[in-house]
Picture 1 (tube, rainbow over the protein chains, first blue to last red):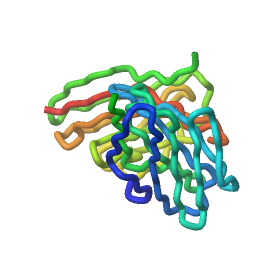
Picture 2 (picture 1 turned 90 degrees about the horizontal axis):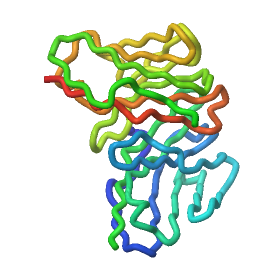
Picture 3 (picture 1 turned 180 degrees about the horizontal axis):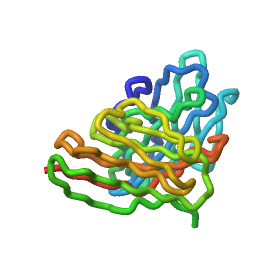
Length: 110
Length: 113
């Protein structure tokens, strides 16, 4: 998606924290989402954040939202090999469908 | 377990064939979507529907059409398949508010030869 940008690849060691970044363009997005795609599978909703929040924590996942800079990040604490996947951020522009980024492939080294 | 089911996991079709990709959801969701996924391009929206018999074009509708005769079923049609339509096709659904995000099917990998 040209309106939502992510880096393509991130490699971390098992046990480290991973931070996946995303920039979006539509300031009217009510919700912003993170999805995970494991090999050969569809996308699975990981978490989402309402646009009037700065942070949301859900177990090992922390989402940070900077509305001024239109920047969204996903932090995974204590990254495990099972976290290896492609992570997509998505914005929700008005009534239209979600716009997805290109996805960040997370590789976790044992 | 609620789900979105895509009828085929893998499909191989010849250039010029008419291709039907079927998607069924069992969550009574109002909204349904078709995306295609290509490496480095992420997901691109083809068509979506907010209600039965209703459809709206997404970002890349050329060469595709859709049908939604029943609430639970949303079909993607390739009128005359071409090699540049070789891709992974993902169907998704969501409730009216969309707050909970989308539920995706497992995808159909279509190869046009």
